[in-house]
Length: 453
Ligand code: FAD
Image (cartoon, rainbow, N blue to C red; front, side, top):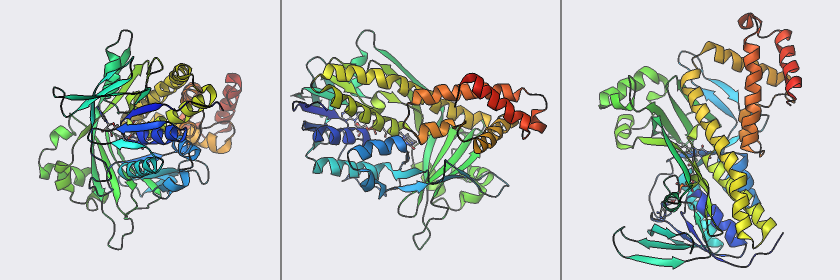
């Protein structure tokens, strides 16, 4: 571990990534100021029922490193399985991983408040309601103020970290430079949050240790538990088309929609029709860019460097993993910030691209493939084989969620598994013989040939 000289560092953004990075850097002895254009989230009233996130291995690893895992687990609920609510079928459960493996439901707002508290306890200074309008990259200066055209304050730092989310201002400044790659792709599905209130005694209305899914082909509803007994539901629905946000414009249309597609949960959703029109419909985007750093002065971390669609539950986890790996590079390189930044972007970029790809594929899988019988058969064969030969077949989901191996490796091995399954699905009479030894033997043979385990 190399020593570092204390530096004066600005972090733009007090979201989950900015506040955790602040804790890491403060503990290395640096002077840290965090700027956020929003008010202090601890002073903003919310019910604690807004967006829920699933925290998994990569997130926990980053928290463990600074001794925060146990503290944060107190405000999270473990989910060991998916609860599938398919119309006309009783609810059925699918375990996520091996015994005891879970993803954890946590409220983004509650977690963010806690992280800011912890950062402050460590001596981090927060400047809320202070928006960064411009950045001087080579001189590591930032400019804040009330309005874009008004008067600005100038601050000079040794380093700046842009943790200002998918529509980052810091990145925006980097984008204007030559040879800066940037792409942004919105999907045609939006989301809206709704709530299932607790029972009168404060208990949960559905199993609280499950991630609830109501898949309906091109759209779906999910629900994750909160500590107060409620669930936050998210409705994912196309913006346009036959069944879409565009076609649900009156309370009656919204009521009819829920009656038709979600009859069993409809009555549980609090103020359904009121919330449906009160709560915003939000968009989802994949954003990729490169480079992520400017000299030894500026670095992007979290969503500002890589925003992904939420269908793998990995956005925050990936951002926390950025911090964990950045920290390892700091330990290895000491004061050589140029090396730290260079190695950081080189190491993280392929993994950010891989989780972006996996997340997008999951979206496609959920929205168009789950109705395809051959796809469902393939999943059944994979599941059976994985149960019989756990040492030979780790599902991609487990590689992403319950492991700390690189995302790029999960993508690569997942593709190799897919090639094997494409072969298997071509076997004659696969629909009838999918449980036969012949199928198992074929998979074993193809695994050996591909040198895959
Ligand atoms: P943000 O949370 O966007 O924070 C950026 C901060 O910067 C904000 O506080 C903002 O006010 C501030 N800011 C912006 N511009 C400026 C400026 N110019 N000056 C000053 N401050 C500024 N991830 C998971 O791991 N698991 C999940 O299950 C999961 N589910 C999700 C579900 C949905 C519906 C969505 C949308 C996302 C989900 N994510 C999930 C992703 C996760 O929410 C994000 O990856 C994570 O919150 C990103 O954190 P961040 O700190 O990088 O950015």
